[in-house]
Image (cartoon, rainbow, N blue to C red; front, side):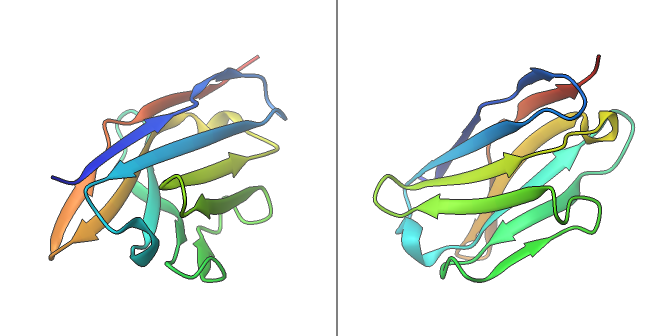
Length: 116
């Protein structure tokens, strides 16, 4: 069974930073792309960033380019989303996602709130 679990969310002031973690099990983690999505209240879930099985293949939404980075630890089966220069519009529930055998797997999400 594929299992993803996010952690690291919280309340942060504008301009602050947070690092989200995604712990994975049930897959050969190093072979899988891990995506980070977010969903704000009343809005559709949107792709924020992806990290490929080769750590050099990263992609970012335009809204977060230059502020967010992604990384992974294939020993501990974790992916990370480092979020810097946070803005109130970054407030959302953040999810990690992967596909395994053509099925989508999601974590339960972690709330990020950017507010003064």
